[in-house]
Length: 59
Image 1 (tube, rainbow, N blue to C red):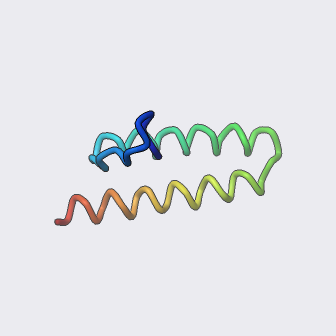
Image 2 (tube, rainbow, N blue to C red):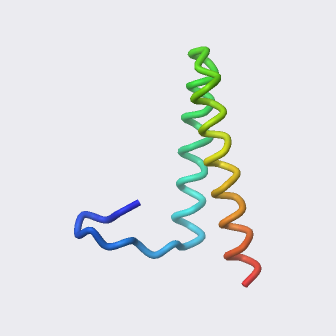
């Protein structure tokens, strides 16, 4: 993500958790609409977010 100023915002655990929550909600909507291709993409985004959050918490 990029802020309005064009700077990359700080990657905090709270920000990452909100992104993961948003991806998970969007994935559920995509699955309900039968868009399994989009749901798979959002699942991958969720997994990446979880990996990033785990790495951040382990440092």
